[in-house]
Length: 123
Image 1 (cartoon, rainbow, N blue to C red):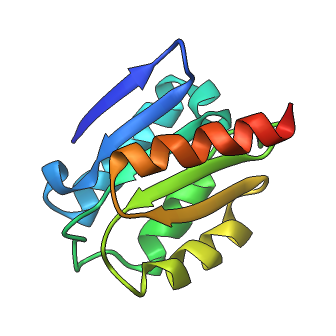
Image 2 (cartoon, rainbow, N blue to C red; image 1 turned 90 degrees about the vertical axis):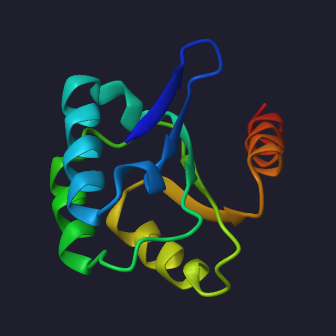
């Protein structure tokens, strides 16, 4: 799975499609948060177009189990997709990951702007 860690902005960018399968996405993501638990408090941009069709609630439960300490300030995960139904999964994820909001945008630039707006609103 391709990813970039931007230390300066504290944003993790993930390309789920590059992993190929939900099992590989889970393995790589659990590896990242295990190696760098502070990433759980960062904002994430997740490219998922086209979305893999083999992801299950069990994959999400395993990721939630591996998740580190909840952030002090609410963090966001912004999924970049054109999938009209992914917002339903995103809403469920809000309950699995404490102090993390899951949102949808159509492109990476819009996702970055959304994160910037949320950060400005907190200041």
